[in-house]
Image (cartoon, rainbow, N blue to C red; front, side, top):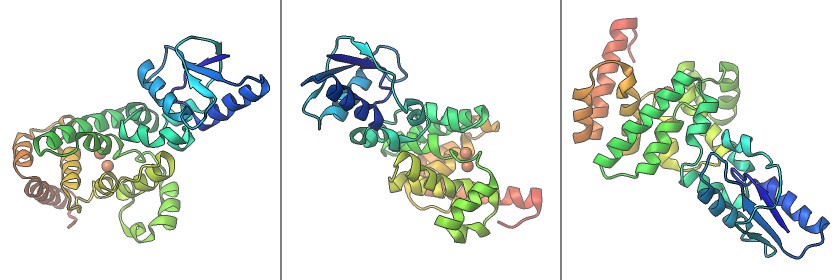
Length: 262
Ligand SMILES: [Fe+2]
Ligand SMILES: [Fe+2]
């Protein structure tokens, strides 16, 4: 028997449904295939399905189309709830940066999503220049403002539980902290390099090259609308020095604009 579905991506509940079909139909082996249409390519979804089915001796991936099954939870997974994906593929989704564009589009308003894409591009560029992990750089750029739309009440609830000291910081900065807890809880993203960079992206108080890259990229992405060639040249040469320079400039700017020492 063959069952086909979009499996975009395959979820834990899809696996349960497939096992149930096998039991109900009293078949020894069940063959499963991916339908052509999907956000991820057919090849990628097939690969993920193969990995998810691997622990099950009687579930196999095939190329022929059979009875169509409605995929379960795929939209939720594509909105960042990776914990609902088949257990065997959750890490893969993160490491391959799958659905990031979709997640940002779902979680952020369009202008913020566009900003995140531009920040990610600058992060990738600076990671390439400094021979760092380009995939991590893209991931942190895309996800850095993921909880920007969260209400102050929700932010307060999360910080009270996870990070109460941070409640003293201006609520405009909270999204840097709440993003970390959101990413852990929903996406199962525990990569400390990425999480630290996001945590420090607004205050610019990080110390790793990735922390500097995200802080700089957030400030100089092309949509900011001013000439950043000087800052970009500095960042290509020395990340720590460039981050320090931009931090000083933004302190001076805030002091001039709002009369506040930061
Ligand atoms: Fe931000
Ligand atoms: Fe940002």
